[in-house]
Image (cartoon, rainbow, N blue to C red; front, side, top):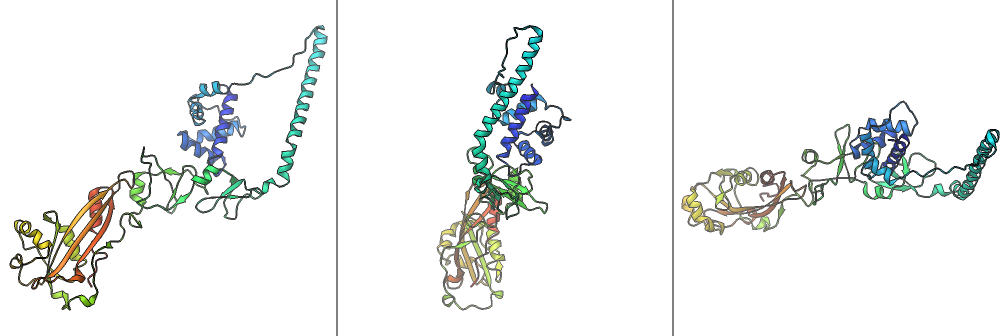
Length: 414
């Protein structure tokens, strides 16, 4: 491999990285390229020093590393790069030497003079051609908004001017429309879309601060303030750090009361509930859901003295429909005489997946229950509820558990 071609490749690599990084320091650019190529950032820094800073104390990169750099430039390898970028043959002016050695020497000297003259002429022409653009830059184009700066959660387009830092205290960098559009700091919850649906590629990158706080960004690259490399989001980070309790429309939202509730004036006047005994029967299919029953006993009906289910499995199955319809006539004789209230209801669970890489499940729990006076069979409207509760977890069992644990959060004894 020719060192001049390697130098050309290295320069192009770092130039490309500048369009994707907020910071253009050697360290920041090397970190970014390291993330993209898996090359060591130290290897990249040495290449930067050798070919851009012209410090020859470092040797040439290993051929395999050069192939990887060519890959970053979207070529298959070094050979593919060379074939796609042929070197132009340098044209020289040869003056015939027809006058012997002495004349040949004179002609050689004349050749150098002619070359210098052509170079000067070319330089003058180039300067004249660029003069309007240089003049334009020095007379006001620097005030055009062709730069940008980080503004807390996004990049803002700003005047380039002559300042190094913006009013936000962040560096002013060359404008990059793609980065401005795509690179943002966001707040996430369990319902955020972290991965693509097609191939599960990350849509979020994160940075952990020294204080342990996690920041989330919508594109890869470097941290917009300190230049450190952002990392791809993982299931582990989501499960450990992402809150699944504060979604507005997703998991763990407050239970929504969707059925009847009536005013206190319609509720029969009752005695102190501390001495009242109650039986709770909540069906999940043909069996009782004891976990829901326990949670109702600890929350909604915590001021009542709860009596364990007195019915056998056969009796429950035989009387289920009557119980759910509010007909207690056939079971009154099976319930202890000291019981004053009977709560009967049902619970259904459905599951949704795909919120986070098809691995975070949401359990939608529909709970309906009525409370009756055992003696008369009268329905106590103020205590009878129908609620929907959402729970989330990284398995259906965990999602269900989290939903059940919310039972009673918004079901209040009136």
